[in-house]
View 1 (cartoon, rainbow over the protein chains, first blue to last red):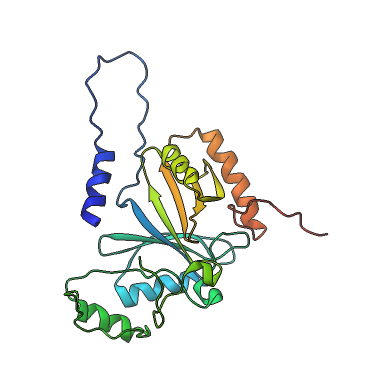
View 2: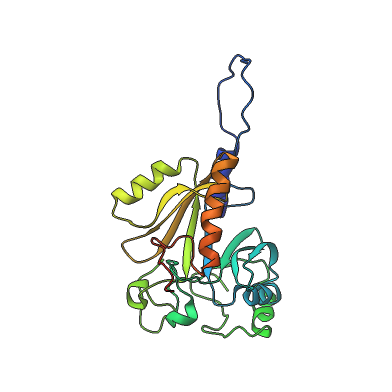
Length: 145
Length: 108
């Protein structure tokens, strides 16, 4: 799916257009509809304590921090990390926002699925960082560990 | 996706009442995709509009309770960006999120 999404994004990056005779009008700067590095779909997490969460994702999943925009009181209006080739965005929860944090809701309807080369290593790093195991890592009937 | 089965780690948003995750979609013609989703019954939670960060962006909740945001980067004039940013920052300084549909007047 990621490959298909990437192909789609490349289509946006490289629109096919017929060559036109150049006019003397000043050239308008083109804006790419899709920011660099993004697939078509990107998860955006509402978190109570987004800054602490970024630290934890670095430790547990080897996330790279791409951006953070704090409010004066240290909450994050917006932040981006990258895990492997995928960007994950997040922010703290502010009054009036649509989404609510998982700790307030008591659960989440979304599971972020990660495919990696050495899942055992990745798994242990996350568990060592304090992740709670809800389904043990094992070989599954659909041909995945 | 899947249906929810007993013993699953996740619960559906209609049972939880909300979701902590918004799926952000970048597309070339955001107005077209937006209209298609709204016509299909998505609930608008933040109207599609030009935003201070240089995107045409809006938020929807699908009929199953999952949040989506649809967006594309656009060219905006500096004046428009500055004005939108001023509005958004004033809401943040009051502890409100810019996506809040209505700004409540602080009680004095």
